[in-house]
Image (tube, rainbow, N blue to C red; front, side):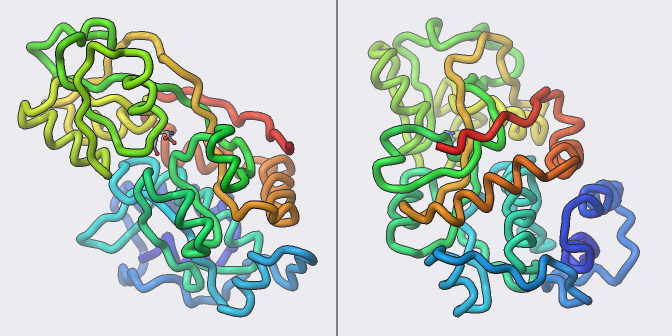
Length: 298
Ligand code: GLU
């Protein structure tokens, strides 16, 4: 399909953003091949990252393994019919891969749920992880983060029509769903003891349960919730209540790979318009207003 081929052909997402828009408008100009780009891949060439064991591993394997989400529309999503992966996080992941010399045909995506991210990175199951992954000190004990590259905060998703809930405070005695191992589930358990919780590995399972009336609300990052509401506005709505937290998204990396971390931080810092183009292509119509946050090169 055209997007992936174009990524491979141009390497960087300046053009990819435009192509995505073309994709969304349903006007692909080639045969719709989804097998990944094999055209003249003009990704970065001759990349040297002296002292990065993760990069050495990628080079030896001739591929990059990226941990992602695939049930979060607008952020990290796999279309099971076309095989196309899309979303802001996925394009950030592709941007990084291109900067390391890997085109789309050399990317292996691995879906990893929130609860399993640190372990997947520690085990070396993925080279890096890009998927609504909040930077925090607890996680930093096991892994490192490049970034931040995005900022959002904890919000609330409810059924549209017929519910008056606007905030977690109003949900005492009710059941709120979130993902196991996520910052929002931890926040409700610690700070809203009157709320009953329901957990699943995936937010999409929470959303299904909300639509079916099994839970009263879903809570997680507002950017994630907006993606679900946009997919099913008949049934779902994001409340207008204030965001409860600030969630800064980072790229999860093996702990101690400071060379790779610096490379990605430099990419974010010196990336010109690319971040904005990725944002516009994926979230430009979402109503989300975010500027690229400054990198925290700790
Ligand atoms: N950003 C939050 C976290 O990292 C919630 C989203 C997620 O589970 O990926 O836990």
